[in-house]
Length: 191
Image (cartoon, rainbow, N blue to C red; front, side, top):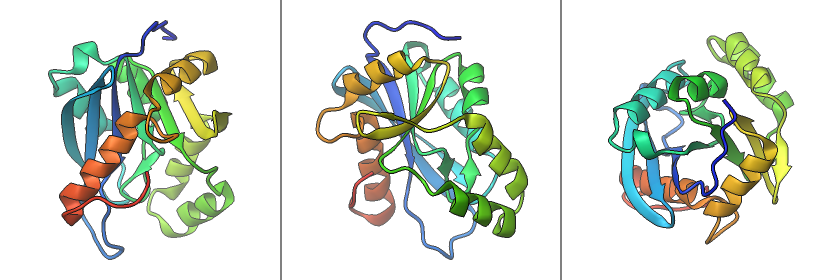
């Protein structure tokens, strides 16, 4: 599955919209599709808060889109959406036949995540196993990443190709801004 992409020009980055702590049900997830430096389109789907459908919903969202044939890689803002709806990045990568790169600014507190999953989240044991299966966090250019379907060298190249206005790749930064603007009326904060 490790494919070589010389340019990494077409990627989609996904982030979830903010939601209130008492929200139950589905949460908006936004994808920003980039062709080179240009925002080429926006995708969206919904995933269940603390549910188990993020992998299937993201896969369907991408596969149904007109952008799917051109997409070189999928970037995710973290491994979980809508609270603890954990994405199986290896299954997502295999289903799409595209590499998947999880990107976060700060190293997560895995002990706290494990404790929360095992003590307070339905299906927490299975979700923790997905997180463990994802593999270790690797630091690249001040960001922490997890990857499926690409080497660390390819991940570095893909990140560098899309970092422009902050240290977060532009597809993720843009998805974050759109998701916040749609759900709250205006965007705020950093991805």
